Each structure stands twice: as C-alpha cells, then as structure tokens.
Image (tube, rainbow, N blue to C red; front, side, top):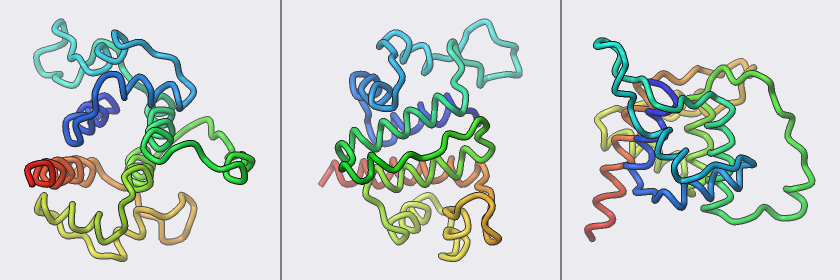
Length: 169
C-alpha cells in the first residue's frame, strides 16, 4: 500500500471533495491544483501488468504528512496562538507513515481510542487497547509498535462503513 492508495481510500471513506483536498494541501503548506490532485488519485495506464499501484503522480511521505497537517486544520480550524508558537521539529525522513497517518486522522476526525477500536471492529479487526496505544505512541518510546498496512487498510474500510452508516441515518 503506497501513499496514493492511502489518500484515495481516505477520500472515498469519508467523501472528501477535490476542493477540500486542495484546501488541505494548502493549509499543510503545499500549493496544488485540482488537476494535480486528480493525478495523485489516478492510476497510470502504462504500468507493468503485475504492478497495479502505480499512479500518475506519486506521493512521498512528506507530501502525505503535509496533507494530513492541513486536513487537521481543515477539520478542526486554525490552531490557537500557543499551539502555533510551539514549533514542531521537521524530520527529514518519515519511517512509519502508517502510525502518523492513524494519529493524525484520530486528531482531525475528533476520534477517541474507543472510537478507533469500534472502527477496527466494523472492519473485523480486534486490536486490544494496549496494542492500539503502542501504535499511537511516539517513535522511540519503548512500547512503540509499527503499524502495518493491514491495520490501515482495515481502518479505512471500517471508517467508510461507519461514515456511510451515519450518513444514512
């Protein structure tokens, strides 16, 4: 699962419009157009037969992280002055993008740990609270656990199921 897949699945799970994607990238510090966003979400037709995860415009971890930061601002609003003054260090390399993806979606969508567990359960995955806590820990903590693609795939599936069922009510 690559970053384009993550963005595409998130977009369909919670029904994010192209204009909102552009705004989120803008809030995250990247200027992109609707055409560039569509290229990020479009699979390349000239790819190898056994490669189905090749997109027209690939996204690296820094681009996805910028989108997630902007998505938090889009959903929760601009940070307060105190929060804005705290300058978070920019790491050059993001190793565990799945962990960051899950943490930032939790923040942006106002989810609690119990909400995360319910979303995973909707997809048929039942992590324990301590396992989820280990995934949400900061890298370098002794209880940190890398989050696999299976968890993200099932989280996005469960998120779509939960979000769509709420829409129909």
